[in-house]
Amino acid sequence: MELLQRSRRLRGSEVLRRMVRETRADASSLIYPMFVVEGSNVKEEISSMPGQYRWSLDRFPEKLEELAEAGVSSYMLFGIPAVKDEVASGAYAEDGIVQRAVRLAKERYPELYCITDVCLCEYTSHGHCGMLKGQEVDNDPSVELLARTALSHAQAGADMVAPSDMMDGRVLAIREALDGADFTTVPIMAYSVKYASGFYGPFREAADSAPAFGDRRAYQMDVHNRREAIKKALQDIDQGADIVMVKPAMSFLDLVREVHDVVDVPVAAYSVSGEYAMVKAAAAQGWIDEERIVGEMASSAFRAGAHIYLTYYAELVAKLIDEGVVG
Image (cartoon, rainbow, N blue to C red; front, side):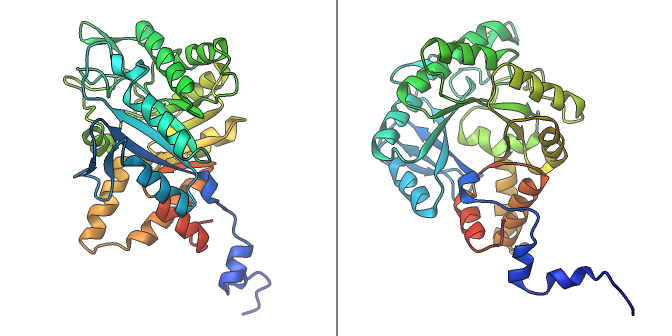
């Protein structure tokens, strides 16, 4: 065969394959989500997420140390309070579980980057992401409490806040609250393109945040929509978002790419609990090569255009990046 172009020429060795690789990643792009709870000496495995735990404040620094040793420099905190109520008072309390966790983390591991999830669902007695008016979530009063929550996180020492509630106008309200209190340097990573997905099931067990009635389709996005995703990302940027997120990652990589192509801020992709649980379950049966699958999932997110990857596999992905399997 007389061929001038032979694509296999650039696939002949690992050194060459890495030299010409189109997608590159770094462990600094990874964020590890973790759960903190009230109590003492708690390291409670989440049944639907083997290998993931709820941590009490006296023990969660153990995980921070593991992250630091693995080269994962950023983490996101989700809080699980001892008491929930109709107005989510634990979300914005000065002595709330997340606020105390942030202060402890910044004291013990100031070099690690602390991001806080800003939502009310873990703190409300009904499990919805805002205040109720009858059987509906009342947007504007909810936004007021979300801004109050974000500000309390910044006052505790959070490096970044990440509103995940999907209320209209919450990014602007949070930006104004932060700026008004001289937290102008605290960035907002907005869950801008967050779909009403079936992939969140294990998380709701982990965070004890399943809604007591109904679902979240009235405020999270319809999985069939793509133009709305672009609109939502651009709206959040206009309101002050510094980073926009697409969630879930794996089944919405087309939106990661589309959002990446139209925005001028970094794009994050969240590989959510259901993705993690499916890989763990299949690996436990011996049906898949866990490390290889995790590497492909991470590579696909970065290839689609994600600059930041949130994953419960952050430590493994950091290892795979170091080994050249990812990036």
